[in-house]
Each structure stands twice: as structure tokens, then as C-alpha cells.
Length: 332
Image 1 (cartoon, rainbow, N blue to C red):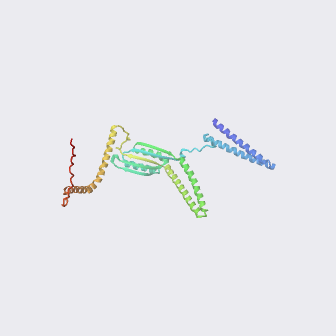
Image 2: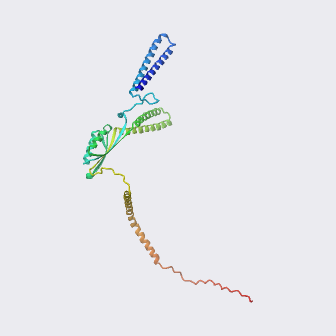
Image 3: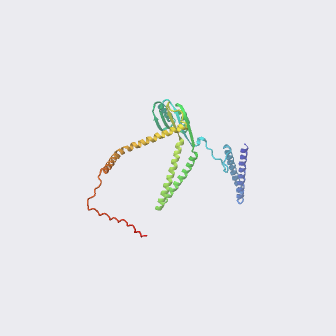
């Protein structure tokens, strides 16, 4: 209350100061005029001061209604958007165990259609009690929670996860950028109409094409966000009675590592045998003939007689050197 009283007192002092300034301005401007027009000028100044005071009172009342909150350094408080005015993307994931998967899927589709939505995807696997159906449902954002509750009643709900994303700032930013880009496109079109030379015409056409492409990209982003905010997405898994009800927990230990290694070993052997099976026909078709040919060549080389040299005059033997003569010994 004290804060409101101080704010109201400040607004009134501001209005009084504004009245004084307007009155002084009116007196100064009327000093050189005819005395007959002074009352009319004072009346106009008084009316302007009253309007200023009323505007100040309205501003003070608006500030009080807004809760007295204002941004520091600004003259007015920022607008506070309510929840129903914000752009929020709702995404839900559910797992429901039912007795009859096909019947539950038909009921889910009927509920979504009655809410004004449609089916984005439908994948089913029929295996008696282990049947499964994966449905991607698009429903209006206003009926998101109603549809989620209705889907949970189809059977035993095992898991539910709901996520929200506030994209209000992105939508506001896109609106501002689209407005600016449209003005740029309009400006480029006006310049194109005034072009007088071919070079100017070509450059302006390229610039206009670039700006129009940027505008189309921004509008596509806005349409995508608008689609996500207007229609929420629910991914529901309908499983049969024999489906596992608990998520697999992370296990550690020697046996867990041994089982994992054995699985990897079996997978590797399977891959190796697959590759061997793919290569074996080529080995049989090309390897066997080549092996037989190599064996025959080796046998032929072993059984072949040594080469015979032709007969001819005997070559003279090299002269033998005479044995060395011992040196004569002198007498005593």
C-alpha cells in the first residue's frame, strides 16, 4: 500500500509540474500578443493541463492495476501475457496395456477424431496376447489433456510422459522479422518499377528474389510453429497382456559382460560364415582349376630328362705346371 501511495503521489506531482510548464509556456507566448486573446490562450492552456492530468491519472491507475511492477529504467511496465495467450507446444508419450489391441486402437482413433484431430501414424503387429500398436495422434492443444486422460482409460497405463515447450518469444520474433521483410520486399518492388537501365534492372531483380526467398523461409517457419502449437502430438503404445510391464534395468557384472561378449562372438562368427559362404562359389569355380594346373606343371618339370649336350672334338686339357724344383744346398 505504501508503494502504491508513493507512486500515486509521484504521478500527481508530475501532472502538477506539467500544468505549471504549460501555463508558463502559455504566458510567455501571449506576452507579445494582444491582451484580448490572453484569456482564450489561458483557457486553452488550462484545458491542456487538465487533459495531461487526466492522462497521468489513467497511467497511474493502469500501473496500480498491473500490480505496480515495471521494468527498471523504463517508463511503463512490460505486458504480461497470460497462459492462454502464449504459444506452447505439447508433446505426450504413453504406454497402455490392454486386452484387445485392435479394439483399443479403434477406440483411440475414434476419441481423437471426435476431438477434432487426426491420425499421423499407425503401426501394428498382431501376435495374439503380445500384439502391439504404435499410434501417432494429432489433437488440438485445447483438448490435449482431455484426450490423454481418455486414452489412459483404455487399459492399464504403464508409462506417461508429457513435455511442453514455450515458443512465444520465437513467434513474436518471427512476426517482427516477417513484417520487416515484407517492407523490404515492397521497397525492392518499388525500386524495380523505377529502374531505367538493364544493369539496375538485373541487380534489383536478384535482390528482390533474395528478399522474397527470405520472406518465404520465415513464413514457413512460422507456419511450422503454428502447426505444432495448434495441434499437439501424442504417441501412444498399446500392448497386449503378455508384454513386459517394466522397463529393462541396466545390469553390470561378470556374467553380464560374458553374455555380451558371447553375443558379440556369435554375431562375428555369423558374419564370418556369411562372407565365407559368399566367397566359396568363386573359390570352387576358379581355385580348383588353377590348383590342378599348378600340380600338372610341377609333375611335368620333375619327369622331364636332363638336357643332352652334342658330341664334338675333345677340348685340350690345360697345361699342368711343372713341380717346383728344390733349391740346391751349398756344401759345407
